[in-house]
Image 1 (cartoon, rainbow, N blue to C red):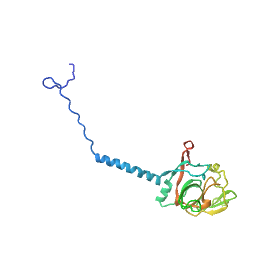
Image 2: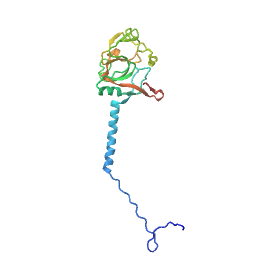
Image 3: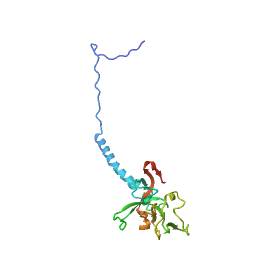
Image 4: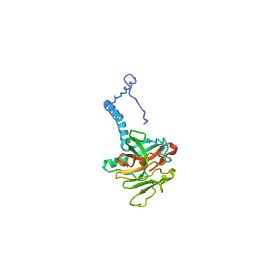
Length: 219
């Protein structure tokens, strides 16, 4: 038998009016507002935590790291090793040739009376003797009692095209490192203010993100 679709009819043959569509009011209005506020408050706190303990963007100011870095280069500095060292109550000792950012308190006598953040390359490690003489730099330690040139046999050595000026020597204390700018003829570094306490290190440079055409990973 053939099937037909049908609709109910009211007495008299009239078609019933469709039932009105009901819309429920959204529930949990207060909960939604509180969630939004929580997100708005959490975002800046998360950003502060990231820049304080994980990584931070820096802009190079000056010529002391030429030709590796140029004025106005934008960098990412990795802070995790320093953060972990503080959490475990150990000292963060960077590797030789690492480029680090550190705080140099009160540079009185060097054109500034305020704390500054500087970026330099690690040359000497704790316990080593660093000698600058005749335009060259040498490091003496147990493995190299006769001394060695820390600039040689490293990829960055091609970027150092100026003599290491000065005539002095230092024994790097425990918990400190000796740093120099790659532009040895125009850099305010450990040759002027001595070794840097590792507790003053902010982090290690890992990436240059600007200019975009000079993007580079330094890890």
